[in-house]
Length: 515
Image (cartoon, rainbow, N blue to C red; front, side, top):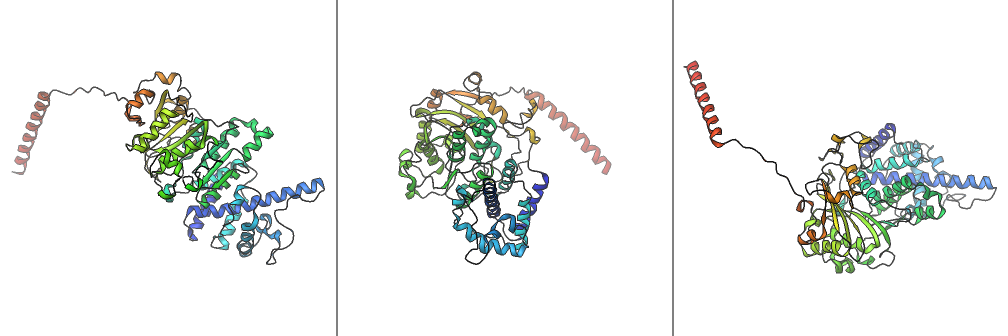
């Protein structure tokens, strides 16, 4: 569990990085990630040593070789348990001149993360700062999956500015809502084709650990969980390293996190990706620049557009197996855009697939990174239609203030879609997410009877088709106007005349006083 003490230590290290001249939060996290990986390698080497001693057999797999490197330094000095006790200057020299070259050539522990280490750079500016970071990480109980996962999440929360190409971090409670609504299963193949820090994949893994704990006691399902279930693509190598480490620290040994520009022609029609997944969870870039010439032609055949959010929707449909489901965040423009590409994509979702729901999110959800209004689209790939009624929910509050500060409106145990403590009726107005989840589960029964004046309601497919496949909630929501009784105009004029008389009288009294 994350304690206040660990939080304050991370804050101190963060400030030290800033003072040392590293102001990019991604670079800070990347440097800390390298050190976490070194600690993990040492733990694995120690486990191999213990196993060897227990079985009285030679070590099966040595991560750190015997002897010395090409520059005469003992490989034993590369181990976390040893270098953490060196004087700062010596530690700095060992890590910068010996450990990092070793890491780049390692090929590693067989994990996805090791694969992304080939262009690792050591940029911590001073021995004192390196020592401070190493001592902080030495205090974190790495055998506790929750603590190390929470620590990494806390650091990721410090990515406080939007990156290039529309990158910004999806709030954890929105990710959790989408995971809860799609309810991953132990046999699912889960993909996020714009995975960033792998937040969706981590949340899906945590959901399965909570709801399906027996899967880790079944050898076949356990292997699938660690090696076959999770797939994430990104074209930013820093993000791939951070995402891989996020998965590792949350207890997924070898997820498939790899370099891929998901919309590029290079990856068009790849058989390993087409109709390969049963669940897609994503918040793709909305405003990314797009190289039109290099865009996958098979995506352009589905929808001819330069807009990344539309191309990603076409991609999701291509990635999903028939029967596969998706929960994805889209900007509001996707719901009501009037271009041919917008209309055709919406028509495909409604007529050729099964559109299950549209959850309209409040405008401030992505602040301070972006003020764009968004919605969650939930659909199932059928290739044969199946949309009957589409469920809509108008989220007014997500538990945090909707300004740049994003201050929590309730205590921690009452936040998120599955709060630890049940919300009182008056608290619903501050956090709608538990209600979203409860109503979603009744979308095929009680929800169908709700009037369109309610916060959630269902709309028949025919009504949506009649509106040109417009999916914006406000197109279907009915507003009840309260009747307001106004006073008669003569009565108001009489009151005004009376006031005028009083003003004139007051003026005369003042004139007399100054007279």
